[in-house]
Length: 101
Ligand SMILES: [Zn+2]
Image (cartoon, rainbow, N blue to C red; front, side, top):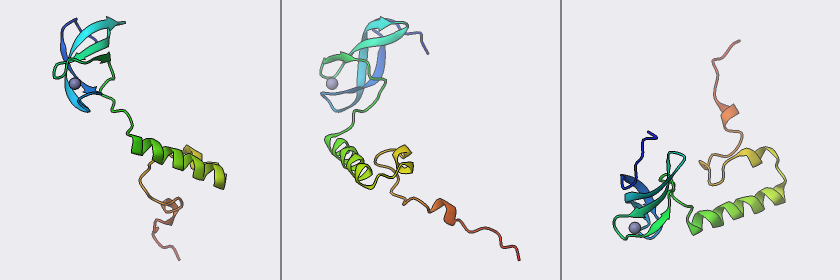
């Protein structure tokens, strides 16, 4: 890694194609691709490191999550990532242990 050259191909997320496509490197900054061009639609964009931007639905979900947090004021829940695994808090401690009598 880190051996990028102008014109090299790499996979990245295209905001126009809305999927991972082949991209050509247009600019390199600090040994990292800075600007790439989608080889499918020729859209030029900043290199995203294949990161898929959150959808509107995910943004809405995160916003709802923040509102719930604000209303309940639960500080420990603030560390949980938005849109988590759906497991209610407290189930981790409910794991059965070997009985000692
Ligand atoms: Zn594209």
